[in-house]
Image 1 (cartoon, helix red, strand yellow):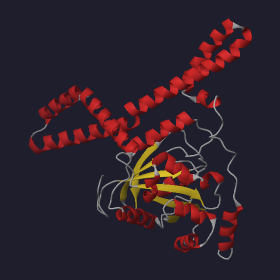
Image 2 (tube, rainbow, N blue to C red):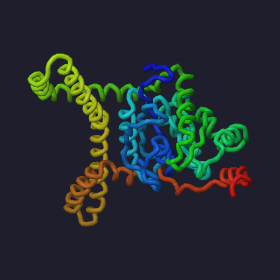
Image 3 (tube, helix red, strand yellow):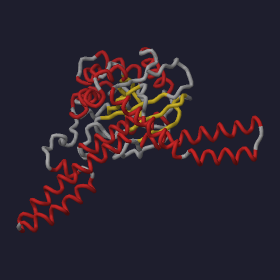
Image 4 (cartoon, one colour):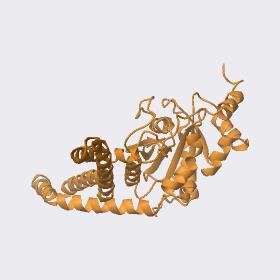
Amino acid sequence: MEKRKKGSSLELRLMVVGSSGPSQFQLTNAIFGREEFPKDTTSVSGSRKILGELAGRRVAVISAPNLYDKDISRVKRKMELRRSKCLSVPGPHAFLVAFDMEKISPNDIRTPQLMMKRFGRRCFRHCVVLLAYDGNPDGAALEDVVQNTDWPLRHLIEDLGGRVYIFNKDWRDRSREQELLQKIEWMVASLGGACFSSGTFQKAERSVKKEEKRLMKKMAADNEKVWSDLEKKYLSDELYQRKDAHTASVSAKIRAKAEVDNGWLRTSLARGVGSGMVAGAVMGALVGSIEGPGGMVLYGVIGGAVGASAGGAAQVATKHMEDRVAPPARLNFNSIFINRFFATQRP
């Protein structure tokens, strides 16, 4: 596993996780102090890796689709889960699990089970719970209340490792960014500086490295030409600096490309297309059966093509709707408690 010392310049990899709703995207904005996601974003269709700084520390934030998004197919969710792992190899230093403090939904309560299913039980050791709050509360006081009061949110936090931090939904507020960084740093330091890893993260890392080697080999001739041109223009130390800069630039581009497109991801995509094709063909044949054997063949072909283009969307239509839930309901136990706690603090 990768090791690092607290306070080092090594980039921190943070995987921002949310069960449903906008909290994880608000958190990403809060980390960088800029609007990476519009304020009304409640879900995204694809995983993203965003680079920047938190309180002067280099960070890479990996934002994936919500864990319990009712509008994403099972195949698509699996694909994006793999992509998020590739974007964070060799593994995230921390999972930042985001909730809206005043809108905890039934889906949010299931987050520990979803996290364990997606990443394994050991991921809880790397979790920090981030609670979004609309305003600028006394974060330390509220965190103390949350951790010492017997109410459902406290149990949710305990299931995810027991570490909690309150952040302001307004990303312009930078007053507590140093505290957030320290909270993450302390957790990582308590684990000896190791990033999280598992069998699938190791598989993702092997796939990314294999793709990097393939791309580097493919670009070998172009690199040699660039170096040859540099040798004609520069001498001695400046030549080596130019070569190093070119190599670093090419390596970064290749790495970025390998993280979003490699053999592991292509295999997942191919399976999704294949499943969609089969399901589409079956649905088309059923519709075509109304018009007889000829209709079954015709509509089966059409259905197969549509299913393939959907990349697995048709597969969901042929299964039980077990991944779908009713729109998140607001649980009164949470908002009532918070409102009562701050009743004397708000104008």
